[in-house]
Image 1 (cartoon, rainbow, N blue to C red):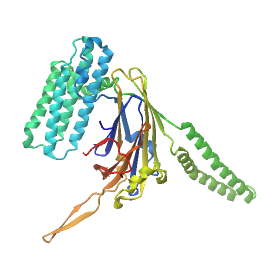
Image 2 (image 1 turned 90 degrees about the vertical axis):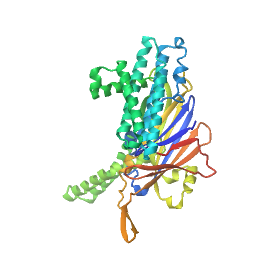
Image 3 (image 1 turned 180 degrees about the vertical axis):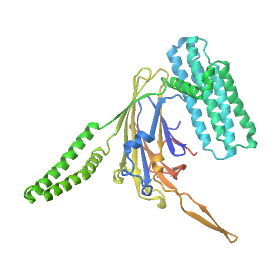
Length: 467
């Protein structure tokens, strides 16, 4: 199993995911090298605003694969299981099933080749149908247990139907693949009839899109119970920031007071010239006060974590893991030597000046407190590049060509290349490195490719999906 998985999530976002086991102590550093021509830096992008608006993470329990041993094996001796254990295992399967379908649909939407698209759609349809059938073979007979199963079954049936219909609604229609389209629609019709047969939803709920949507949102939250970890995020350095603000104000006032004393000595009595001089002094104070404070805060904050996060089990409220998070623009001279060495191996045409946005997350997973049957948690972090794209230029250039005396032209888009270097540290093991090239324009990520590293640099196990 690869330690890290990097993929394009949507048109302008990337996601990395990895799994951590009990007792792991892992640190991930992501260095985004943004060419200066993109116009992105500390003067245009506020790190704190970017963190809250564009970095979304999800941490949950994880079990390898979406196969039915998770249900069949663990439900084999139901008499020996408690209802709490049954619900946790059921929720884990249902949650991973839903997330897998969601991810596969997003990947389908990235496929531009029509033939490849429909073959992948047909494969997804078959997998969904088989998993739903196998899942339903494990329906419990005890009414106390059955209600949990019906909630998960109702949601998975509706969710799979909606995802497949959504794909077809936006797909390129062609008569060459009518048979595949019909098979997908047949599965959707069968699932709708299945829910009606089991009376999962009332007539009023089915007729009102708002009611059915809100009910399924509630069911999704129910199957996340016990699986998705509760997050308690706390900003760090609040007291230090207040102290910095006070110190900056004191320094500015010290200079202002000295200038006022000198002004009073230069002018005899209370004159208009003195009033104008004082007005100018206080005006400059207002202009430079924030600049001094921000400069001092950046100097003091440099290299310090910005947030702490506690991950709790939603059922027992036990602490599963603790994290520290860094996000800052950093100077070239502060880069680790290995990262600088990797950058030196870029092609000469790509060696442009860049702003460096550094994201770091350090996680310490507890040895105990896991729910029975779980030993791994999964972290998925999505980075939106939309705040980067808004500063980019639209393509204005044209390429001309001549064919048999006729001159034609085509408009071309402006593309930018963002280098991403990921550093993985597991406990006391040697750091491992991997470099990606993200090619993007104003509207989308064109491609993500993995670059070769120098022989002297270790590369972690990783995978990348080219969308």
